[in-house]
Image (cartoon, rainbow, N blue to C red):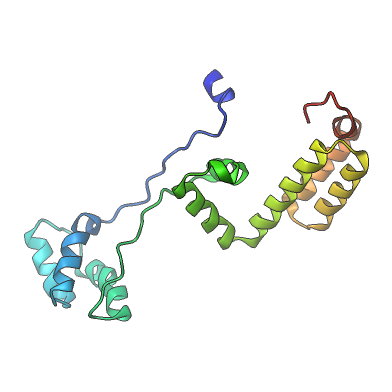
Length: 180
């Protein structure tokens, strides 16, 4: 537990996305598709000979995007990324952009693109960090107003707690000795 407490960042927990039986046959399917075999039934029969125990429907679904795109060209194999849990996601969002790996940056952008509310919340958090670090009670009031106007339920709860502990919060915002 002590090592977790002293960590510079949240330890990445790799969560494995549910795997499909077809994952191990993807390269073979792509090769056969490129060579001209576009029959899901035929591909299913060939895969069964190679040990595949899944259904022909799964093979049809797997190749459907290729069929819709262009029967002659295959889309590139999708880049697999580990989907972080909620806590890992928070640490990822709060981590300095300069310290993000390529995969972390990709996940971060995907999360922000998927939810404008998360982006808005992140802007509020960064603004509030600057407010507390800026050492000014006036900035604290402006920051609280911005958070209140956001209408994000979680931020409203934050303001309630902050108002309950207003004296220490004001001291943190104005004292040069505060750690924020």
